[in-house]
Image (cartoon, rainbow, N blue to C red; front, side):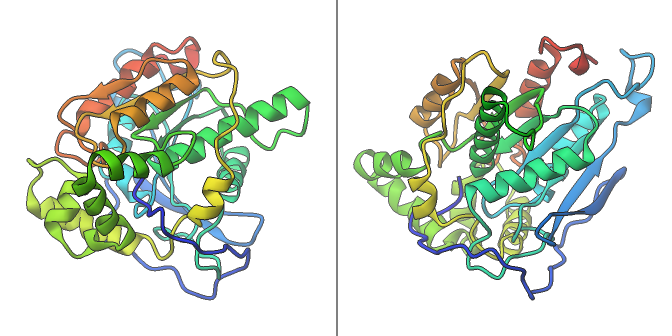
Length: 335
């Protein structure tokens, strides 16, 4: 989630004159970075990790039939959060992996507004990237508020199918929601914490609304990571998070007014709802709300915190996603 419920800023669609910043993140071996050109004229950062052929023991060859994976981050993060561990993990299993940085985040361009966009503009940017750059229907993987963006993509895709409208939102092979904000947004989470966990509510507000996680190492650790996480790693990720977000992803007031996400038939798409046992932001009720919305049973990973893809036991969540991918009905996903 990692965004305050107290930002009340109005987005304006305009080009930014602010230059992109270079983050202190070095790409891993086999990773490349390019910039996708959006219809607005702005450029969106994409980190790509191609499949590593030599690790394929269960396939005779890579024939392009495996659905690509597209990773969408949440607030205060960018494409680097997936590039650190998960892109390499899935590339070794035969998946072509793409991690995008939403506008105003990472090394993507910014608008001239005080916020990066709306739920719909972020979805449209993602849809344009998929339409223009991917040859096969992908599996979308969204974390936190990125999960909410994926949910809205699914709703738009289904609406186009029902109405027979143009195909701006291409078909998906599946979707993975990792510690995702529920379909109704974060308001329920905020108020639940206020009334049942006031100390935690204060800490979350201080950490995210006041951005205290950027300067307090203990608070950053408690908000995003497990207690066992090495402080040097927390400090590294704290710096990357601090530098990643030049503006909030949304105006939260306008976002909440646009929710809940429109419902879709429960059989319309394969969805994995993945939660973390030690998530300080999205509670068990939030996880259950999302899984019920899609008519699936949630998978909760033990010993992992909100930033599942960066935590010291990051491989637990990755293995759960891989198991789900290998059991999808379509042969496109089979390794």
